[in-house]
Length: 239
Image 1 (cartoon, rainbow, N blue to C red):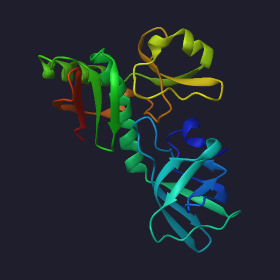
Image 2 (cartoon, helix red, strand yellow; image 1 turned 90 degrees about the horizontal axis):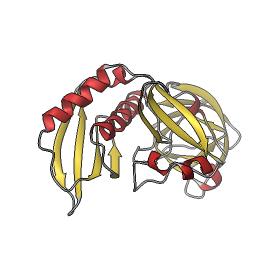
Image 3 (cartoon, one colour; image 1 turned 180 degrees about the vertical axis):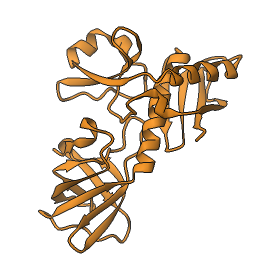
Image 4 (tube, rainbow, N blue to C red; image 1 turned 90 degrees about the vertical axis):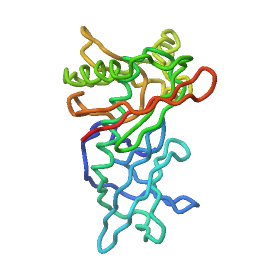
């Protein structure tokens, strides 16, 4: 197992770790990682590893076997030796973009309260696919509602429930195409707003900003038809 430091503090940009192993494909497994592995529509993190006189560019991060987080080196990069102490340096601008977009998409699922059938995140934009037979009549009104929620500067926190509690509350799962992060006996919930004044609560293993005000200005892009019952809604960060 790689200790997921990104889950304890998504804002940490640099820290030390030890190389546990190399995979057969040339990936790097650390004992503790700032790097988020691809999942739930959010891309894996990139950055660098530094050690002694060496340096390795990390192109992306993926999930490995038995809970391992595997850092994928850029082509031609040297690998740090097994057992080596390394410094992890996150590509912060890219990660922070993912955090802002991911949190904005949670709020998009609030202003469009329909089943989510898919989604994707990048550093400057994202999209959600909805079970939406008809195109929204007033996209500008949806954008205004979403921006109003963002501008409330709501707190974003996490909570944990058991797998059994999630099974007993299936309405928490909004995204039909992505299974909630199970397997450890507990499921992480991301809450927007306070428990008393809650705006959104759903299972999610991704990284998020601490307050919605960090998202900034957004713009809803095109709405594409993706099948008889599906519409794809694009969201862009404006700055």
